[in-house]
Image (tube, rainbow, N blue to C red; front, top):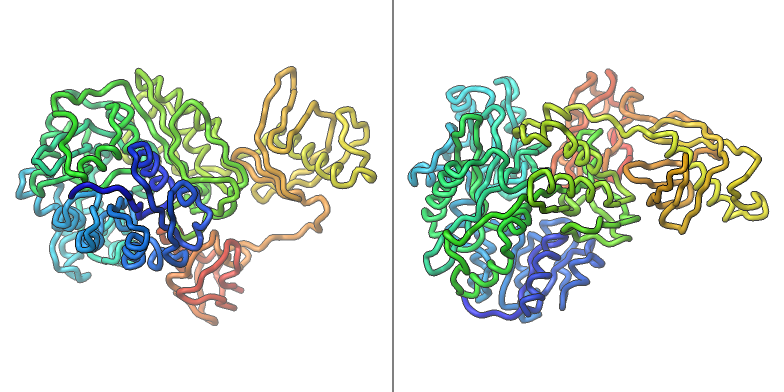
Length: 627
């Protein structure tokens, strides 16, 4: 540790932008690294210098340690900030930075190595007297041993990747007959995401809260905690909504959890930003889950309730300074909430989405951390999270109300997102009352319907298509008029359904980005993007099929299996001529670090298999056919 002047951010997207904002404010120069897919990304344009470190796949770019170190060498960077994800909790990367005389803005190699292993960290926490949940964290990893240990622990139980987080390599097993298949999937996902297929087993708590404590330590032996965050609103074990403080927290419980977190930190002489995660049951008992030896995605809610810039603290501590406050000086003010905006389709099992960012309009008045620019392409190679919307209020209800308005007013057009789900959760009585657990989404949003199109949206879409056609063919259609007297019927497709819509007079004006619509005396301004026969509105995509011959689109039930998104084929389970049954697993597709199983929609015989393991495929590409 010591003085440094130029920081290389070994990451991408919103966290790379977030680190750069504070680094620039403190007078540091920054270096961005980027893959071929990110050449025009926002974090690249923000940096003082930028270096391409390889092709789009993460193993060849953002996980390529020699390429990142070379980028630091040729730019003269003397410090590295790892962000979160990628190499942030990789002890080999931290050691490589130290060996290259680079200041690693994070904890020691030993702390990363120990806490990066769920197996070893749990053993260390048991020795340190931190409450832990029952499970198996042994080194024997064969199926037979894990089956025996699973029987000892009892069902339901959790399989977890020892080296990872973020839901990758994590599976809930309800019954013994599910174990072997879930072990296979967890190992494959863990190896792909973290380079290690080591697993642990844990008893699955029923309806716990996920509550975590923010730690900060310096190299002079000081260690404090900055309150807690409730991260219980999750899907696939990935956080969706976070808040601080926890709605059910008491002063006594906060102190007990804080002191347990300090025990965890002291066990590894922790330096820098770290988070100790716990499961909290309905009786106020809490259990160690894991420790993240990095900055968390949800750190903004702690910043807004404490008033501290945690990235600034990271830089100061890495430079050898002491913590700026003592434990007694930490106070929590008001309430903060954060939502994660994902490019995914909740109605299709949260399948990640790829495509172009056609419109990006962050809502004003709140904090929005993102790395987006209009014209960007959301690729299948990286995480589906595109940004975070964060609000602060004097009370929890004020923070919720501000956040709800901000989510409703944010516009990301071009890909499907979880925006409407976020709105629905923020409006749900259970969430409003603070009565929820990690099973909240599974309980209340288990079946998510495709967004329904309203008559007003259809009328607006028809009017916009009609106007656009008139603008392209002014002599043939004589332009769009508010008092047009000749009806024009359009066939519009929404979510696979065709709607016949007659264009009628509307009080409508447009500027190419927004339509101003007056209906029943109420004036509304609506963001849109129109490109030929495709129209994007908030949460909705409309295709003009008026001039296309009606046809049946093949789907899984017709025997044609198509890729639900861009991605890579991990495994092909069948071959031509094989008999298959409806629901049988056919292929496994990996996209945005998650595996997606593809199953048969009908009974039949495999006619053609058009892909093999390792193939990169595009959204809607035909993968195999069943007859």
